[in-house]
Image 1 (cartoon, rainbow, N blue to C red):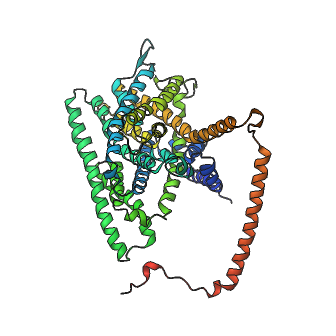
Image 2 (cartoon, rainbow, N blue to C red):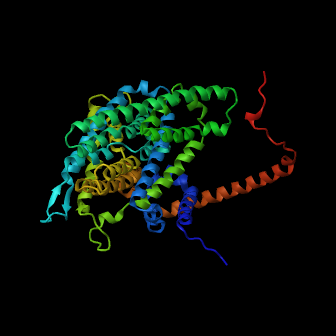
Length: 521
C-alpha cells in the first residue's frame, strides 16, 4: 500500500524546495539583470502558500507562534549583522565614527520621533468596545513603542543597494559601507527606544520605569551586550589567527566560523538576557579590525550562501504567518479586533512613513555636512534616506512588544489588561501592514528606477519617430541565439570531460587534504 505523506513538514519542504529550485535557474537574471529582490519573491510565495502551511496549527497556538517568530528573526538578524560587519573595512568604527554616531544617535532618534508622530496622527482606532462606538487616537506611549519598531533599518532589504551589479555601478564604496554599518548597528540599538515606551506604559508612575530603563535596558542589555561582543571578538581573532598559523584549523571550520559565533552569541546572550544583535555587530567589527579575517575569507561562499537561504526561508515564513485577516473587517467569518484601524488609514500611514520617516532626516544631516565624507551630494543623501527599509528588525521588535504585553501588561489571572490588548492589536496591524508595504516598495524600487531612467534618456535623446518601442521579437531572437550558443558550449564541455576521464582520471592520485599534511621545518 502506497503511503502518501501530506503532513505539514513535507508541505513546508515542498514549498521551499520548489521555490528555491526554480529560483536557482534564474537567480542571476532576477537579481543582477532585473534587480528584483529575492526577499520580495519569497514573501509573495509565503503569502500564497500560507493556507497550505498552516503555521498556527503546527505551532500549537498564537503564543507559541510568536515565540518561534521572535527566535527565527533573532537568528536571521544576528547572522546578517555579523556577516555584514565582517565585510566592513578594518577599523571601520574608528575611521567612520563621526558619520556612524550622527546616523545612529541623531538620525535614528529623529526617525523614531517622526514615525511616532505620524502613527499617532494617522492611526485613529475604531473602538467597538465603547458604548457609543466612537473613534479615538491611540495612546501616545503606544505610538512611541510602535514607532520604535520601524526606526531601525533592515539589513536584508538594504543589501539590495550594498551588494551586486547595481550597487557596483551606482553606489560609491564609502556610502555602501555607511549603509551597511548603520543598518547593522541600529538593529541592536532599537531596544532602548522600544523598552522606554513599554516601561512608561507598564509603570505609569515613572520612577520604576526609569530604573528599569537605565538599569536593565541601557546598562545590562546594551553595555553588557557590546562588551561581550568585543570580548568574544578579540579572543576569537587572536585564537583563530594562532591556530590557523599552526594548521590546526581546516578550511571548512575556518569559513563556517561566523556561523559558530552567531550560535554562541545567541546562546550566551540569551541565557544572560543581554543584547545579542548588538553583540554580533561589535564582534564582527572586532574580528575584522586588522583586516586579516576579511582578506582570508574574500573568496568564501559558505557564509553568504547560508545567509541567502536563511533569508529566503525567513521571508517565506513571514509571508505565510502574516495575519492578513486582521485587515479584513468585512469578512464575517473572521474575528476582527475591537481596536481596528481602517485599511485606507494604514495605506496613508505606509506612504507617509516611506516618504517622511527617514528621507527628510538624512537630507537635513547632509545639508549640515554631518555625514561627510561618506555622503557627498544630494543624490547620495536621497539614496540613503529612501533605502531605509522596514523588515525583519521591525517584526522582531513587534514580537518583543507582543511578549511584553502578554507577560507585563496583564492582571493576576494572566489575562491582558485593556491597555495591553489595545497595544497588542494596534501594533500588529500597523507593523505587519507597513512591513509588507516596505518589502514591496523597496523590492521593486530599483527595477522601476532603471526602467524610468532608460525611458527618460531614450525619449530625451531621440526624435519622436525614433523613440524606443518594446521589441519583443528582438528580445526572443536574442535569447534564442544565446541558448543555442550555450548548448554548443555544453557539448564541447562534455566532449572534453569524456577525454579527460579516459586519459587522466584512471592515473589520477587521490589528493591529500592540506590540513592533514605534516608541516615542514
